[in-house]
Image (cartoon, rainbow, N blue to C red; front, side, top):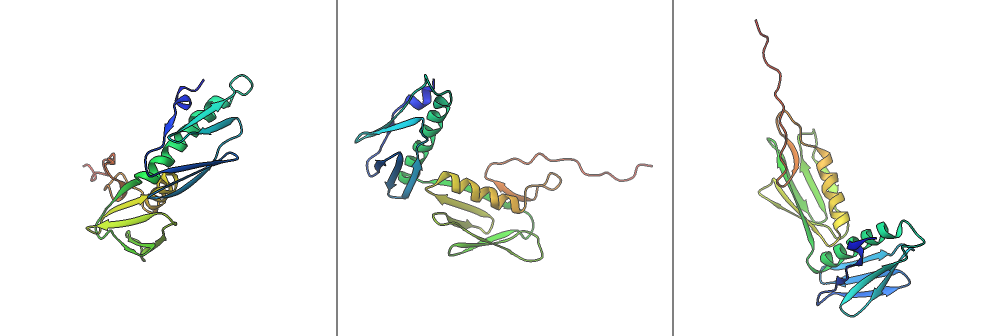
Length: 181
């Protein structure tokens, strides 16, 4: 039985939730999110909370799906009310970033700058040419955009250069040593 899934999800002030045939639509000051509740789980909506119910006796996956659904709905409510942010750092000589509207231009040591189109709902700010702050109401899309940016130049272990998440430590390797006589 899922203990996490049994907990009610509180709906804060300024956020509205609508349930229509298994589709949960959550609107808030930061945006709007939609989620289709999987079939073994049912959602019940009150004025100030969402409660999930599942039949554990006849479906083995109901417990897992209930916990996952609870986590997704809780993240959606947090996203539309407060939003999510991810920070990336560019480490390397000449590495820099700039934002023009919904596009980013990254100089990462390639022969030409890399242009990246940001999806709808994701905004980027660049501080000091090397610190990128991504923000969105959708945690999944935000994490995927951050992972895509990091994959352009992943951190390498010899010099520590690349695109790093904020606070990420690169485990360094010793390079080759000179010929020993």
